[in-house]
Length: 189
Image (cartoon, rainbow, N blue to C red; front, side, top):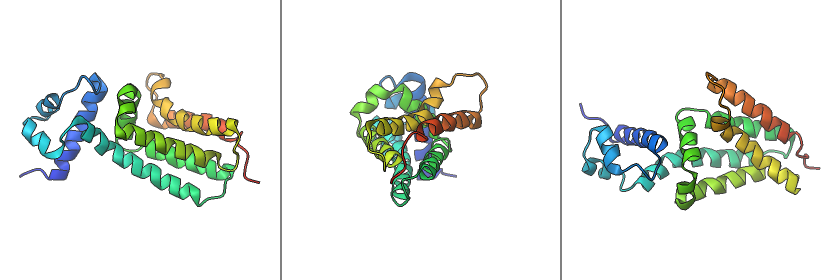
């Protein structure tokens, strides 16, 4: 029985992400991805023309989730309760499915991401989420706290190095630190 095109794309994404995280984006070739999959380069090219296209494909889902959060936040009052709900939803999205692996990829390939369109789109969404987290308090300190709140969630993947820590424990710690920052952002008057 033939595998569906969607299943093949997902396998390519998973293997590429694994190799990009193990070896680095720049050191991984399309040939290596094809070999690990057990397919020809031509079969790989049918789905993705470049490594950039592969990265964009797994970033797109994350961007869509971030867009949904930004849209939701824009309809809510600028209060601590909204900020807590927003960062909670963001953490839920970032700890779901394959996204922890994507976060590790981002952390280990930051230099390359700066030059890719996907990386620039991620930065834009992060700044928009930061704006929503500080909405109602335009102070520079609030803006910094808002962005650091997001980084508390991200950095938990590489900054917390406790052996055997579970994803749930990691997420709980990240949200505790994020909450300390959020509590210092003023509500809209």
